[in-house]
Structure formats: structure tokens, C-alpha cells
Length: 422
Image 1: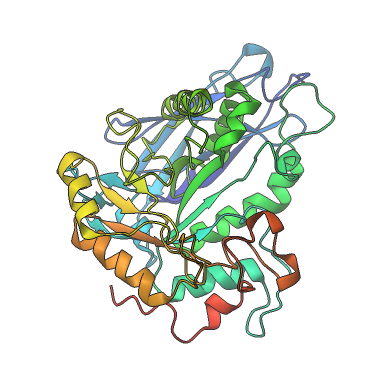
Image 2: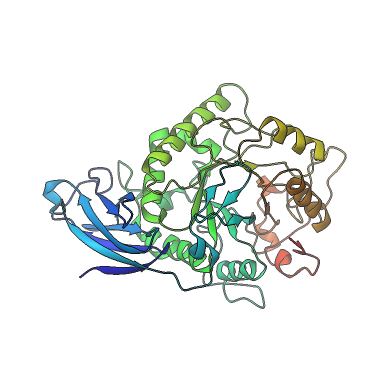
């Protein structure tokens, strides 16, 4: 019997391999080719989900009857397995499923949904979402869950993008969450995905958010390009049928000139091209830029790089409309989004002394970026991006940004916050 799925909504197909592999992730590759009523073909790789179980995540892009056929080694017993999926219209009220996944308008000036409806990017920054933001705890009087409470609040406020990063960094103590620590090769720790990451990704998707997701921070490329490709491969297979945008790596080029910078740009470029190859939907891809002066432009002319996710910095740069206009004049063929600037309550990095970033300072940059040709803006708040439960949790390594003792609760309750009027 065939399955049913709503248009643009993910369903999961499950299969059991007859063969057990020493490395069930790297030793086997199982794919499915989905063919839609118009003849469109979408290839999706299966992800290993423990034991001999492999699952395929798929979201049909058009209504009508779809067929699928598996491509797998004969010893799995899955080669040639076929089936059908009936795609029915989505009947909910979430724009991402009413109009479809994001794409670039032919003009190159802004983003649209799949059906051509214009999309204005209004994001919120959550660098620690994958494990740092607590699911079952909250010390906010109006919220029972830190993670769900923040997501719900942002949904109510009209945000449509959740800008984040897996933070699988080489210097982070949490990197082992993604991989089994007792394996000699890369083997996903499926328990972490099943118990933690799956529910977070699905919760955001069910609220209608586009997850602008990076895999790690710049320096993690030192773990090896192949290792980063492995993580990208697994994440794409497991979550690539949800509403996502790939942002590659945080501050991709890093801040060390010379060979380290060249190595980072080159290494992450290889990962980006691999992402483009593995993603069956042509999902939009960009890179979270470094804080350049005035603005970064590496990768700009490369085919996989779909739009600019800029970083204007945190008060140590006199942001002026002329910089945006000059950038757009020279680089005007791809959409521009101001993705990180003057996070609210952030301690600025100005040479003449730090001060507290206010909502008015953020709003000035947001409007400036849009009025000079940008098609979106990502808000950020101290206490949220750095995931501060209590003041005592402030990381000394990042104290330069949080000199005023800001926790995650303040940006959600301050009466002056978030009057965007967009």
C-alpha cells in the first residue's frame, strides 16, 4: 500500500538491511530516486539509524502520485525496492508549506518561495541550539522549556528564520555528541540524534521556521575536510527534507591571515561543493561570513554560493549606508542579507570603550541594510546566542561580548525589544 504525504512536508521511509556492516555509515550507501507526476526526479540518501535500520527523509514538491525505487548493494536485500507516495495538498497555514522551499529570484536581488512568492528573511540567532538550549528546563517564569519557549516566542513575533550552527567544533567539548567515541572511523552517535537533535529540528519545522544551519565554526576544518564531509552527508540525509538553508560554517575564513585563512577557505569550499552534490533539492547554500572591512566577498562568484550572509560586526566598525551601497554596486547579482550585526545587549568592541548595544542601534542597521538593497536581516541577542542560563555561566573566553551580565531571559522580556515594524 502506498503512503500519503502533504506537499512540502517531510515523511520518513524505513528499511532493514539484511547485511550488517562494520561501519554502517561509511561502508554502505543506499539511495532512493523519487519520481513525481511531472517527471521531476529527486535523489535522497538513506541515513543509518541504528542496528540494520536505514531511513529516507523525503518531502514531495508537487501534488499527485510519486514513485520511488531504491539503489542499494544487493547484499542489503534492498536493491530495486519500489513504492508509491500520494502527495496531497497542504492544508495548514504555514507559509513555507503553502508556498514551498526557498529559491533565488531570477533578478538575483531577493529570495522567494518555490512558487515565486517573495520571501523576506527575518532571522534570530541561536548558536547553541543543538544541545545548549534546554528542552525540559526553564528559569523563565512564563516558559516551561527554554528551547521551545524561545521558538514559540519568536514565532509569535513574526520571525521566519532560525539561524544556527551545529557547533561540532574541534575545540568544543560537545563535538563527541555527533560521533561514537569508541569507533576508529566516523560513526554517527544515533542516540544523540534520536533523543535530542531530531525533536529540535522537527519542532522548528512544525512552527514553519527555515533552519539556516551551519555545520561547525571555521577552525573545525582542521579536523579534516573528509570528516566535515561526513557530518554534512549525515545531516543532509537526516534533515535535508525539512525547510533548511545550508550556511556551511561560522565565520568561514577565520581571523588568522596567510595560510590558515587560505586553508579554511579552500577546505570549506570543498565541503560546500560536496553539499551541493549530495542535496537532492537544490537547497540554498551560503556561508556565514567573517567580520571583514568593509564586507567579505570570498566565494561570491562561485556557483554553489546562492546569497550573501554578511557580518557587519559588533560596534567596532562605523556602519554607514555608503558601505552597503558600494558593496551592492560591485556585488549586485546575488541576494544580500545582513546576518550578524550589533546583537542587542552585546558589549561593543569599540576602541574608545565598550557600551551596550541597544534595540535602536540594531534597528538602524536593519533598516539601513534593507533600504540599501538587502532582502533580510538576522537579529541577535546577548544571552541567547551565547546561551547564558545564569550570569555565573558567562564564559570568560567570550566575556568581551557580555560585560553587562545578560542572560537568555532578558531579551525575551525587555519591553523595548523587537519593535521591528517590518
